[in-house]
Image (cartoon, rainbow, N blue to C red; front, side, top):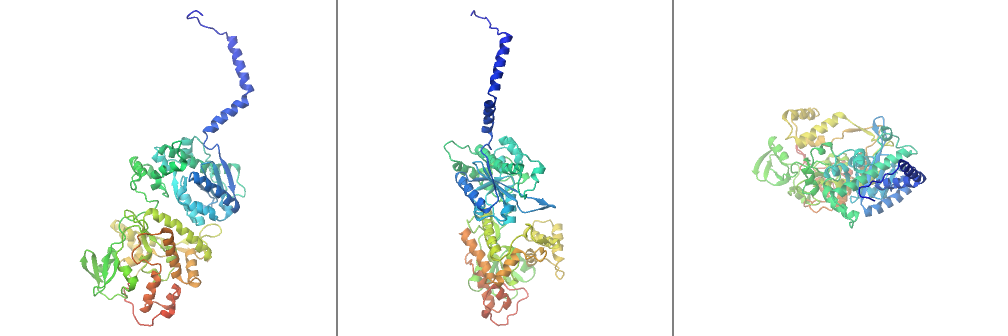
Length: 588
């Protein structure tokens, strides 16, 4: 062909080629469509989805066994819940969705099971398995309230979005932007009847996708945060990711965290969040104390004998009331002007005399801690006064992580007590059979603010809160620490239709059938020791502390026979002596 010569194809030939190509495409159209569909499915992260609807205990046990096997390979579960709202009130969680990295999604219909089987409870309470979703912490709270189960290690995906420089959005938007998977969030579907005898195909698809998309987003963003090498197993890479996100497990996400967030400790994830503008300290959803619990001030009898250690506010109150005088500044020491009803006796007395460390009693952490009531307040508030007073023995300090673990383990004991004492939490419809009394709730809130934040509240607001408290004490003209402590322990609910609250029923059963309230106290203390294995308990801390204290009071003639019976002590040890109480109350 001569150089520069062009080949010209006649129009008729082009038409012939086009027609031929169209015929080939038409003849093989099914194969081509299948190939295109396969190419699309290959990019679809939900291509391997397998959904199972669980409505019986046997099926639940079978599916949980499979979920646990998948978690052995990758200990993360997509986590979500569905419920029905009737008349503006939420009914118990109707369905729990759990999805694994292999595409299995279990839709567990709790409304059919009526309870949470042991195997499922163990999986939810396993803190090694991370439960991921949007608002996972809130869903866990609903399960706790409805079924008495603690869901450990929840994680809100919006934290991971912030760590990887993505927008912290809702699940549907994150699914579309990160996975290119659209979610149907039509309100008719979202608010449909999740307690229906049979779920529709649309309901099943909607519920399953929420959990499956959650774990896929976590996998995707985890790989952005910490690139997984081809030789690495999923769990090996997860360990690296957990170093970044550990501070945000079991922490409720707040929208303000998108603009201001948290620097917690020295974890890489915390530092990175700080770099992107998050500044508010996190503590796994619980407020830590802003000041020490133990001031270890000294309180002395008139002759100088040490009675106990106490906080600065209490010691100063005695001085302000002209009931004591300051005798030393370091340590701050006050000496009473009156003879106390009791002195420090035996190990019980020495416990109150011993200074306490401001640290987590489990792990020893000293930079953040929270008060932990070893015997929960829902039971303690129903104890007789002689057992409710001087409860500092059962108030210990835990760091946020240990506090969270302890609270989750407490749910197991509550469930056992509910069965043992026939004291359920809820009525048949899932709602509590009690209603709050607004006046008492206002009183308790005012007392709490004055007790824990009195020094930081503006004077005008402080005076308003004091008026609320004093309105219930017409014979007194000044708020005292003892008064505030009493207000904090009041019950702000009343029974409906004669229902007995769970805590009161348990207390009544132990009073009448199970050896008295010292046995209930002992149960909770032993549970704490067995589960948490504290290494830094205060010296002389004892599971039989209150029993020993009450026996001392009995030997001194300072306890009523009826109170001994309620506690579970032998009344024959009561000493019939006259020992009138001081108007300021007993010290021990």
